[in-house]
Structure formats: structure tokens, C-alpha cells
Picture (tube, rainbow, N blue to C red):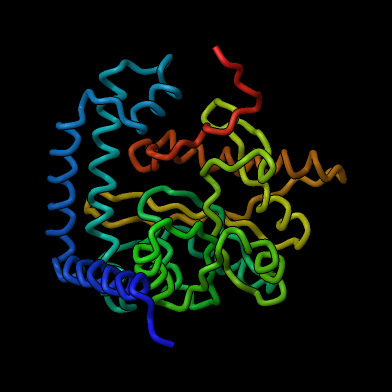
Length: 306
């Protein structure tokens, strides 16, 4: 069947974007980091006092604890961090087992090894923090187990295809968020390591309201549901930028789940525990988190017209 014009355009746009990513991957990583940092600082200076979604979120959370100049400074560092990430992520195309230590170092790797050896599948608790794309690729290359990640497909198809190409480079299965539950429930049977980024807003019917950064946040309840049902271990994993530019990939010990026999209470309590773990990293490294997302968009009440 011949391609439609729209399909051909999409394919050419995909090739152009992928070509750009390939070119960026050829820039030596120290230079790529420097370029990203300089670009980020320039953008931060331009946007210094302008109202952005990230600065709005920082003011919403830290408005009573930090001065406005402190929040503007965090926002600038956040912009710089993520522009660096844009130049670092293409290096997924250059990753090998031989050069992995140029990009990342691993901390408490024994935790993921112990979890995998249980043979019940593993759920990775993480978020849009540090360089999650590089972290996922490096971990898949390192542990050599069957890996998967739950994602929300990008709205623009060519971009989604490029991201899928990068994310699946080392055999990682891409699980669309809308069809995730069946795959998650099969993790135990297939002994897969499945990454779940659960730091973004969801609609009220998908989540439960538990505190995050001191504010009620509608949080996806899927991880708590499947972890309680399957008994698969939950391992927190986050990446933190080191002074030399590399990322330290931290595996925490298995999360001890609360089980009272009350399903609703257990889902809420364990989702709260997961949020606390993510929050710990956000508070320690606020410029590493994706503040641009409308995390507190869904409210636990109906707003009335003025």
C-alpha cells in the first residue's frame, strides 16, 4: 500500500530529527555538556524574571520558604540542567559497555541485583529527574536483564519515533501508558525490570490525592496496585549530576510496602511513600527536577466561577 502524503512527511521529519540527534551525538561529551551549560545560562538570563511554568511551580512550593531571588536562581539552574540534558541524551547512540564509565557511575548496584535474583520481576520507581533518558539506557546496558519502561507517547509522531528509537536501543520494551496494566501484571511471570516515572499529574480517576512537596497532588496509583498484587520488589532509582559532569545512578534498597488488608488504604499509603521518596531527591537537588510540568493541575475540589 503506497504511503499517504502525511505519512511521507512524517517519515521525512523523523529522519531529519534523527539526523540532528546523530550529529549532536558526535560532539565529544565534555564539549556537549559545556555547550548545553552555556546555552542554559543564556536562556536563564533572558528568562530571569519572566513568568514561566517552572518559576510558577517553584513559587507555589517554596513561596513561603525562599526569597524570590532564590527561586529565580533555582529556575535558572533548572533551565541550564535541562539544556545540558538535550546535548547529553543523543550520546545514547554512542553508549557501549566499554565507555559507560565516561557517562555514569553506579551506586548500590547490589540492590537491583538482589531484586532481579528474586525472579518476581522488578518495578523501578523514578521520575523526570536528572537525566532519566541516559539513566534508562545505561541501566539497560549494564544489568543485561529484560527491561521495559512505561511512557506517555509524545504528541508529535516524528518526535515520538525518535524517542522510541533511543529508548529501545538496548532492547528496552516501550509500554504505552494507556495499555500498561496488563504488561505490569506480567512482570512477575517474565521477570522484567520495568521503569515507572510517577511524578506527573494524572486525572482524578487515574490516581489518588497524596501530598507531594507539601501540596495535594493527584498521583498515579498503578504502581501501588501492581506491587501489592504481584509482590514484585520496588526499587527507587535516580540520577544525580556529579561535579565532573557524569551522572551517579543511585539504586535504593527495596521499598517496604505497607499491607493492612484494606486495599484502598494500602494503595494510598504506598503511593504516599513513593511520593516521599521522589520528594526527597527533589528537595535535595531542586534543579534536577522537571518543574516545567503542571504537577498540581488536578485539584481535590471543584473550582467555582468567580
